[in-house]
Image (cartoon, rainbow, N blue to C red; front, side):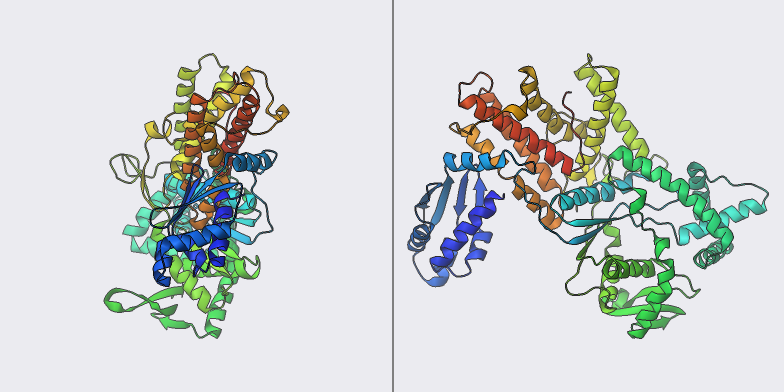
Length: 574
């Protein structure tokens, strides 16, 4: 139940009946809803177009709105329409919302939506750079599934291509030197770093590495056997990180680069049939007018290299082809960093030209900014290496444990560990999700683990405080029955905020900005705290006591549901 949408629809219908041209645009462009007061201030612009008096036009709209007992209506100023929701209307709407497990948000048959997120390169550990895609993408998945869409999680892991050619070439070199290389991930990462350094400085080794890429893609048995060892070890590590971070990805969601290997020649052939391929320096390329390089020269999208190997462009085109033809996706979302903007723009353009993407299908790149240290530099170790994600998660839990021990030393060690896990991991994720997706942000331990401000610990603590109201009096929230009676201004403000939950969810998926939901939950917690300070709950007389207990329960459930949709857990006691 989207309260704002309900009012938008009502006002739009009244404006249309009153003869306001393009009423829907007028309502959408200029209105606001805050604490039960809704103002439409686009009448003046509409009246100017009609060359009529704005107050007279506003009065006509009010006539069409009629004598609605749920609304207090007035024309103010030069032509504003002020609408105030009555306490009776709010109470009645909350009454319908109270028994709903979904808090009034309907689940409807939705679209098939593929969400491409996380996508680490295998053969090395996940690092801090994977945090944004993984966390933001998983929140989007949870919300879309909650709304009723059929979501396909696509973990397009990097298990193919140049990095594996370098690694295989280095392993071959070690074997020829009489060493037996280990396939443990910590060793593989060291080998990969050494191989990458050689690739940059030794042309002979670089050529060998490129040859190993071709051998791997051609199905060489020895290369494939080693490669499978690398992948199995890396996959176990990734799953351990996902489990600790409370991410819904599993091994079943992996659709790796290698899965498209057999389709790569088909992609090349289909592009040839559409006369899209041009040979350039021995490579097969697509040139599209909208992509220009330096000096306005056409920028190639290389689909097959001169040595016969296939770059990321080919693999990503094959992935598009699979997602449209086999998965029948209505929409595909790519949560990938801003540095891939040009690449994905080319992928979508070439795929559209090839007929892989139809007009009814929507492919979107949803980029995100960088994680920075407090000095504004990229989040790296002192020697410039990427910070391991598992190390960050472990440190978050350790720091949270110390805070929990200070705050509530009487808890059992087991309870402290569980609360520290929930608070530490929640803090990391919320720090990500509460920022605008596009912007860079500073990774700051003190801020994200604070129990004050717009943080996960603050919201988790707010939830436990509400639950403690019931716990202190040994009241089960399920046993509370009665009606809402809203008389105090703080009650009315909280009621309106609770009824805006659906609006917040809708706001997230407009551009997949999870911070919209974070800001809503933070506002809800603050509104509740104000209500709790001025409105006695347990000591109130009836019918206010029951009404306020219902408000408390609905607030706790909304906080719990909202945090859950972000992938953040709660506890009953802190």
